Image (cartoon, rainbow, N blue to C red):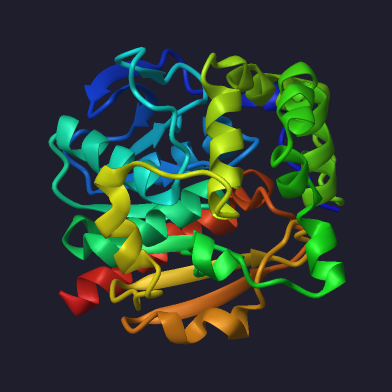
Length: 313
């Protein structure tokens, strides 16, 4: 079984806020200001607390750790009410680069899972000069609406039930009304052996009360299916991503041995990484929220991939 220390044993403390691109980003920070930077990106329906136990491990190893709430989560807000609430993959990656610019971070190890892993992949592919190295749970996650038009076998389609639910107005209304119940269900399905407690769940579920959350989530999944448009300013980035670019930065990919969420087999994406690369399957009933379920394994991968980067520089 996947187990954690009680949620009350660790916390981030007060968060910081910074204007970065179109967002006022809420983020946690730890570790020495002059240390090598690690940017940790969370997924859906989770929040920065997926890294609440990873962060002190990396800080103790000398890293400056930055953990932002993605758009639509936690204390992150749009700076203008007129900005389109866009959930497409390139927008989330641009957010992360804008945050690095705002914090005067030239280069970072970027690590993530779920939406955060996809954003890390996009940054590594499009702006490798900003990504010193990468840790990506479930490997290569760059996609495109065009590729997503191809049908999957029925059993695989079943795993994406919520994506089709969100394609309907009933789904939008249902997610808005029941977002905490929805998140709890996804947590259980995606990590069937993770015995999270109510304190752990409630701490992260509070981030889903963000006023833009539902709009971002619904747009993300509808955009993936080609049901809605993105923003024209991202068209060129998406054109490049649709070509499934090879990632050149040093990379470690991770997978839990009990991941109940849709995910590719590691053999399917190994060839998408041309730099120094390795894959690790983390055993012990580890599910989709790998950094929170196996924080030391995740932190060790970040530290190891940093060594890859030093050897290749």
